[in-house]
Image (cartoon, rainbow, N blue to C red; front, side):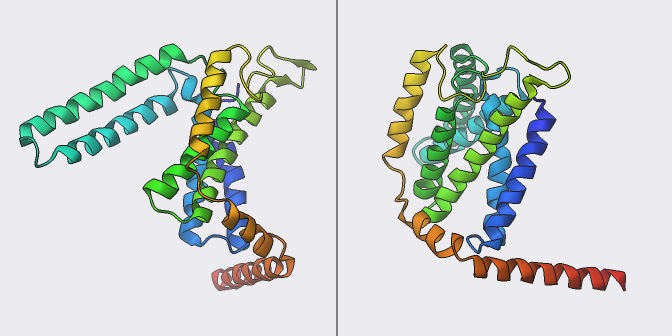
Length: 245
């Protein structure tokens, strides 16, 4: 399997190119472009969520524990004494950070169902749902967020498969085929559970109509895209001239 640094750089490269292309097409402004880039990088680290000792999974559960602890604590402000709220915060943090983490670690196997196309669809839908319903993002922006997480996630899986090919020895390592697969045959119940989660996440997803309309209006307008690219080139040339001075 590819190393953490390889996944980080690979996701950054692919997400960076895709984000710049998104900006050049006029579908995203500077801030949205940066957000999509960071989401792509985060997506590139997510597949190792099933590696119990990995830094991404420990960081993810640590962050999730803090966020959920504050959500629960803020909901109880005014209902309980401040000391009781603080105790609830600590209890929620410990439950998520260590209780949920240990349960998740025991129920998952590295390169299992989280290394599959099914997982790509799930994380894309969850990200889209959260952006649309929780953060109030427009449908197009929400789908872009989900799409970039999926792009980074898929980049991770592809890098793992490439690392399974021994070009010098002209052979395939035993890990070949364990990352880029539709679902996990070794864990059928986990695959069925993830499929059910995909169906649940797809139900509240926003309409795809804005995405289709944006693709029709922007993606096929090659003259507008060429104008934006030429404008960017002129800006870079002007900057280069000023730096030479």
